[in-house]
Image 1 (cartoon, rainbow, N blue to C red):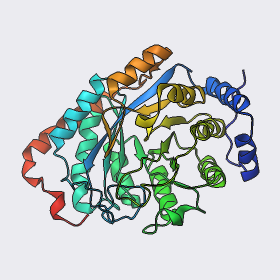
Image 2 (tube, rainbow, N blue to C red):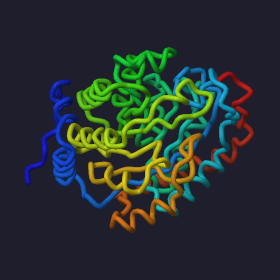
Image 3 (tube, helix red, strand yellow):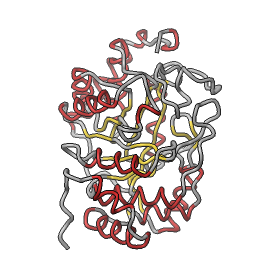
Length: 352
């Protein structure tokens, strides 16, 4: 079977026509494309840890970490390195192949970068893929993260450019595209997707997927989030998205970005097993697992593994391992950290 070629010239009309296919035809096409590029019974498993929670200056209307809204979320200090490494080790033991670290920042301050870079080196030394989401990045920050060994950088577009100003006003759509460009130029892989169910219409969902698929290089990972409605945010009472519409989004993302991992991400706790199974059939082949996604609940890891067994799904295994040089560098980094423990500070004492 000839693999579906990767395209970067999708039109809005073509994407709309995919959404309008009969449901069974759409899933058959998506599953056919999926099998050309992936083992249909493997799902990549990631774990996400918040390394700095709350007091973010951005006004994203869906986010409980925004300092603009009163959601009862306590702001927390930047986690100690030992805590992060311990969490990464536990994630690896439960089957995760990638460890993702998120901080509630508009962008990382220069004083934070040494700690962040050390986290990357030490998590990498465990043989895990590393991913971070820290807000906007300058070119030099992206280069530093890449040099430390960061594999992926997450920076979602969230929605279409047309709908974007209804969700966020403190940074522009172009700001997000610029960060993605900085990440690519530094040589890292991109994790970029969006959030569904924020009151957008089908054209906005079409526009987001066209924007992602027409990037010069498809994101290696495309997280598709279902809005988690948090009390105290402007979106706490937005109407629910039709589950079948959500499955269609997964399927269209798979067709338009055939070689990307499509991640069934936030909102999974509210999805029953049947809905999740249909998402896997539609081409989702990556999940976050663990008890929490940054600040919102997620199905427990044991429940995920039980569902995997029922569906005959296996966690995807990494093919690459850390080289001896990387391992030696990580050991040196750990020793340097021990010698500089006095540098740790409480990030909540600073402006976010």
